[in-house]
Length: 112
Length: 111
Image (cartoon, rainbow over all chains, first blue to last red; front, side, top):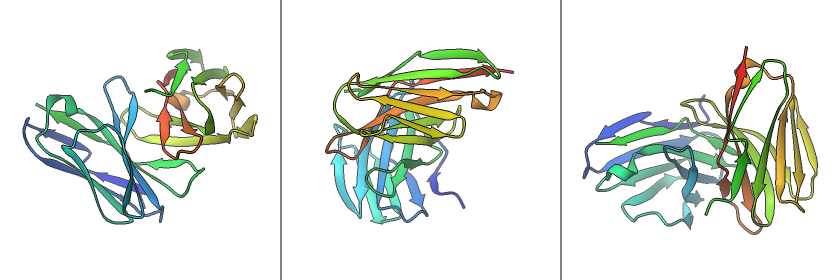
């Protein structure tokens, strides 16, 4: 009965590869987010989707593309992976403005 | 740019003591939230305080907000070893919806 689930939990891949991280929420929330946490534990927003519409796209390289097949899913696809992409990526969902976020357990991406 | 900064960066206390963490931010906010992150895990929402509120309680947690000083504090009373984690403040700016996170405080509670 996990509220926000991400797969895989760990991902090790070589530079130049393309990979995807999946996220699903069963809370019926309207908005979903992707955050990146770097080695210094700093969290930075990457994308958010509200009812399948991209409403925030911070200064993220266009190698990163969010894909939302429906309201319950927000996947993250990354092309041409670079060493600097190594980080922990968190998916989150939110019921509505003014409420807290529910986070997934994270995907640790290591690019070698 | 980073919205919030927390102080101290690390805090070590004995079990049973109180822990206080502070957060400062830069611009006008709609609300401020505190999250806990255990090592290797996701973030857990603890408490949300709106810009027109000054204090909120939840169990052993007490959060204050001073919008004139652009600061907030999180107090954990009667700490337990299980409270060992990183604590982050996060702000929702006025007119926006996404969260901007602070730098985090690493709390260690010694049994």
